[in-house]
Image (cartoon, rainbow, N blue to C red; front, side, top):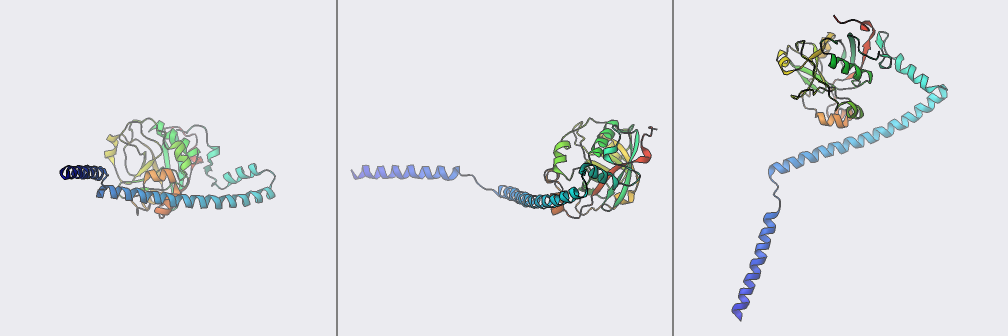
Length: 285
């Protein structure tokens, strides 16, 4: 009888042992790689949370400021829409064509001035170099896509890159649209302006770069220049290279300038870009 009892105890202990063993080895193991990945995700989530709080605070302040400005405008005029339109156009220089006054289609050759935090430069666009790219750039110019955009990638001796909008809403609307490739007719020499793209065909969107050197190796990779810097190349060359390629492009798309101002506050940027009158309606040469 005692032997039967002992056998039963042994069997019971064996079952318990097997159960504990199975439970223990069924648990997930946190390797160093998993822990590092988890910490990185938590860090990014914390950044997003902080930026979201800043956005909410800024929105609240802007709302209060906007209400005060609206009341002041109402007191000054009975036609606020006319006043706003006049204000939007009057602060452009005399040689500029404000975005809402631009012709419906791009001229064959035209110049665009970029007013930047570190100076101004002018590019000259040629439709015969890359017609699809030129028309797309012209449309983005009309909606002020590049206004307030940061130079988020600066590689000395190679390129200065920009073209992710500071406003996430503009990125959502235009940033995912791609255009067909243009054949490469010009070389990526110093000062030439070209769309950035992936290795996939027809992947150009809104990002542009200015060549800081003769990057002729890019020609065979399908990078088709559509414009060149004709004034202020020295401004382009002194664009702040402090952060090199560190800004996260996905975070820029999602958070816009709020992310860049917080994490990379010294980036140079475009205050505004606009069409110049002296090249309106010129014919392609």
